[in-house]
Image (cartoon, rainbow, N blue to C red; front, side):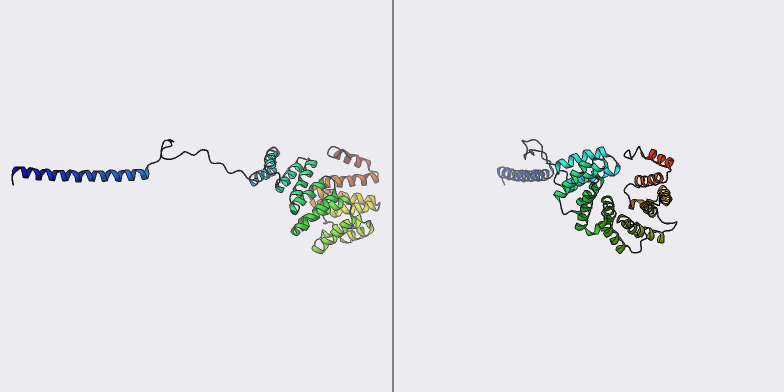
Length: 313
């Protein structure tokens, strides 16, 4: 082989190796580019790979339950300023929610704003007239407002929509019937209680109270004297004292009412069956019994005790 041929052969080999080397380098660069793109974070610059969001995501609006839960906690905690703030918010956002109106009525009740409580309670009924809880709050509000007949009807509506409320509603219905002096309803309620609780000693109270309200004081007295003993709860002595007063046996009335007062002072809450405010009603009856028996010093002492909380007396 001549020198020229050898030189051409060498050049051909060198060129081939150079081409192979260049091809391998290009392949490696391509692989680096692919792998790099897989892990590369795109820049936020609008001139980059994609458009930026035009606005922030819209937050999910808070629902009525969120505010109601906090409102109830504030009411239970006695934080009425916070409860008012929360009710203002939720009632503005959800005015057609009956539970919102119902809780607003409860708030107004604890603030002694009975007119506002009435408006909110009835609004709840108008929004959801078949919801027992709405009629129940109307009954409570109307009873506090001194409208026992309306309260009684509302409580009956509550029971009609939810019969399971009957045991819980009985005391409220009884109080409403007492306040309105509804003899027929008191008799019906007493019979209802006796049928449902035949062995309950307190059924004696309901029977005696309904007899007294119906004008049958003699029958009430016979019933109580045959069944009572020294261990009888305070409510029995309270109704016995009032029976004696109806019969003008005022000295006996004083004794019975003093026993009732002593029981109440010891923490006997059975008088809540006969009165929504036992302290007022018991002392009023006792004061009248003292007055009738010419124990004016006792009457004066009671009036002095009651004049601040009960100026009407």
